[in-house]
Length: 204
Length: 204
Picture 1 (tube, rainbow over the protein chains, first blue to last red):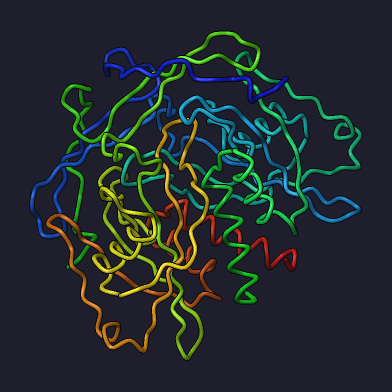
Picture 2: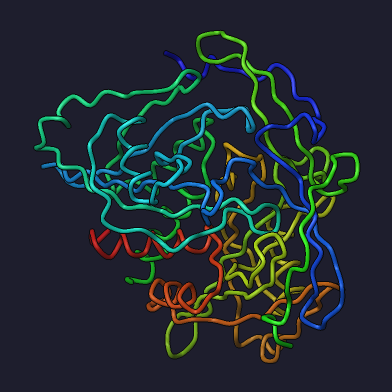
């Protein structure tokens, strides 16, 4: 499979009544001085009723004998017309915790059996524009587990995902290389790389 | 001003023809196997024609005698009905580079005169859901510049932003405290904190 063969052919504006996944909402609010104002934003139509998150991102660091490596994906994303460097990720199913979602999505998208050991607070992707959010769930993957020797993806129809790892020490530099090669960067990945750069510079 | 006095009163679904800032689009694409598929996503109506980015986030680290401090903001964001911990940020004006935008927005939102010295590759906030994107621009602020002694915000009507700094060494822990206190976290800030945690754990 060659992800770069995917391509956008046409983009059309869609009427809200024809949309199944996305909606536009208007919020009427009082500002800190009590004045009435309004604001437009975009939402997913898929958030599970009663849930306060849309989904999870998965931060998995593989402890290899040669050093730690971070698990990344290449995925063609139609909205941005390109192959994006992302973390494994997915939307919550009904009655699922963030940790269960992370373990399920990791298995489906990468074939790895992992164990969630830390979840971030809820974080919002672009809170002036939309209300989409996630928890970043850290998952450990035991590479000595026989199930993790030859992991097999269990992708759904229409999913095209390639998994790969990069040495954690080179991760920020690799992200710059990916951008130069024409890959598109997910902010949630690139900002972790930026945090590593800040930590190095200031010896944090 | 007490940002926590702001509150959402009502949220309504909006018809696409009544929306001025957000739109829903449908993209028709060929998958990597050549099969025709489609995907819905949300876009800003405000991206400048000919520009490939919506705006910038601003990473400013203040070099104080007591140690480096990271510049953050509290801002009430109607889409998420809460006060969000963010970086200074803003949308590009016409004929503006990312660096010019960062210096202008920094001055407007914080009063600081800064100098952009590094821009990240373009990164996308939530590329399965929308095409909104930004560059993270690093800006230096000379605290010995007389203009930076008592910086004054130049906010527009309807903008309510409080600026503050936290010591860079405590930044990841402070983010967790903010979440516990009921503040909402912007993923672009929280993931830099997560990157610092990863760098510490693995001595990167």
